[in-house]
Image (cartoon, rainbow, N blue to C red):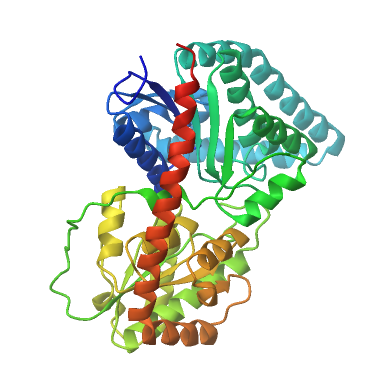
Length: 450
């Protein structure tokens, strides 16, 4: 049976489940477009945390990596399960042992290397069983969509054995089942290791369809030697149908509202080898800017898109503002908790203009027709804002100063109406382009064996 009434089984693959609402929106929008074209389709999620995917997206879900329960209990989110005193005592004991061992450098180095070898060996012994489980979970799927986001990178945890290997093994398993594979509007780079380049180049070469969300990603992939058609399409989030009714919890506020979306940029707690001084400079600039906005008569709403990593940065900004200002800062800050995508869209919808650092903080703001100042921590943000005709409102995160941010904001403020018209037109064009892409991707289903 073929056509939209056929019962298709479509897999949606993503490195999601860690609290990044921007990436979660991509999964939502792909599901939305599948159901629009194939109302009877069975959608299966393949993610980092399938339990989160089941609860958030209401679909069957399976893990893309082996879940090590012994490592899970060590994460910050699970520490509350244990006695705080016991945790502190254990950490202190381990620290003392390490200090003693470091007085014998050769012994310490040997034990450290041995621990690494045993960890790798243990993981290697467990991987074949997990691969068999993945093979079974993927059986019966007609099409595997590797959905947007930064899937093609090797600079995060695990290096080449993180994202690149995970994508590689799933593409191989799909090919073993003769399942069609589509990389759809994916972000790529940096790809720093030869092994990471091999995994990603091979995965893309085996795919039935591939596209990238910006020119930077496309050029990165072409430099790997991936030949053939490598088209660029807009970020998948632009095809989302957002609810027209949005909660306005603070509708009583008469002043205009500026939304600020920070991230823990160069915070040593999140980035290995980062300098705490650089993080503090970034926080101070945003805090001084927010105080300046308040003096100009605006209310300020801080919002995260990564609901685990961003709130501490927001709190640091507020602490600095309260210390450095003579104003009663808290009277001018809107508290709006964000725990879900609906919360996030409601928060952004309340604002008049946005200052965003996260990539999807910029994308979602444009989707909701908000003028944006983008603080770019990577070229992908510059590319994104150029696609929207807003390149002049992108600032380099390492070079921007308070004065340049203020001047650019005044320009954005003065051109707000014209910018909103421009954004609306670009969104329409992006939606049309993505409709064309979905047609191309779902055409693969018609080629699926009967």
